[in-house]
Amino acid sequence: MPFEAKKKEFNVSVGVLEFGHGPAVQLGGENVWPLYTFDGPLANPPRVGVEISDLGTEHWNVGLQGHYANDDDIAGMAKRAGAMPGAEFVCLSFEGADPVGMDRNVEDCAALAQAVSEACPLPLCIAGSGNTEKDEELFQRLAEALEGRNILFLSATEDSYKAIGTGVALAWGQKLAAESAVDINLAKQLNLLLSQLGIANSAIAMNIGTAAAGYGFEYVASTMERVKAAALAQNDVALQVPIITPVGKDAWGTKETLASEEEYPLWGSSEERGIYMEVVTAAACLASGSNAVILRHPQSVSTIAEFIGLLTTDEGEGER
Image 1 (spheres, rainbow, N blue to C red):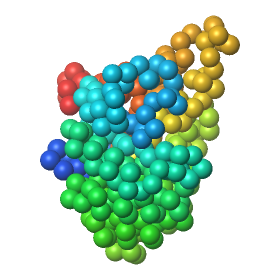
Image 2: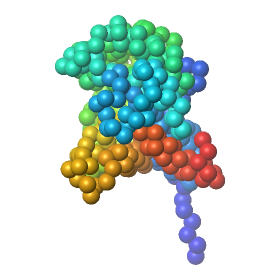
Image 3: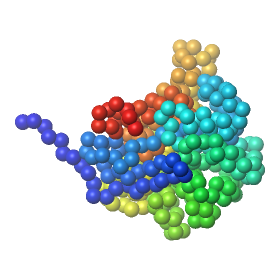
Image 4: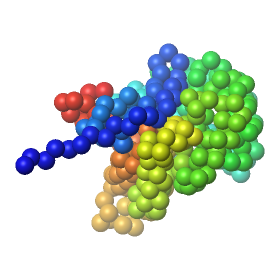
């Protein structure tokens, strides 16, 4: 007797978030398990973004630096990032705004964000400094400076959601990712808090946290799986929003990537190690339920874009 697989399409679906002006990308919309295209078509395939930093690349792996060697400014980096094969959006990270570091003032950040938005051919998302107080001020100013451009801001946290939610989404109509620490209950609570402010689900994504493969990633995978199960199988409206996962920072911050070739000659090229770590982590995130990943290396971007294409097109030829 031949085996007949039973398809599992749910009566509910993950909501759709759209960001970008002119060209835009949509995240979410699926009513099947992650990448289960054999059960039903995906409303939107997972998306691939490229991360750049307001600090440039001097603090990045030397292999990454080479890909931006001819770019004199951050706007040039954004233009190059947007032209990478497989890239669908660009994420500008304001690491330099951290008060513990360069403490770049918000007006300089606003001018830089405007320059990047003008130079970048793709939709833009923005990540902050990691400092709650500074990011509240920074995001509100950037949301104003980029009014009408439908930016996705990463991220509103439990400590900052009220100021960022009102000052970014409600005041200027921008989109938000709610950031929690690899815990489904915290993720749901934060979504509910943002909803209580009057922010629609269609303006919210989730950054539930991540880790590089091999560094506690099983907690990330299990949390994503639980989120998708609650959203689809249990019709939990609070969790029916897409997931976006910044992968680059964790992947390029592991010992396997940071260790020098002189110290560990048998490990081979540190650039190749970083690519492997980034690709493996991103693929695992997508298989677990992420609707978008943010990467750094051009080879990682093209590899993951091809991976998505092979799993989401009828003929498996990788066309998007």
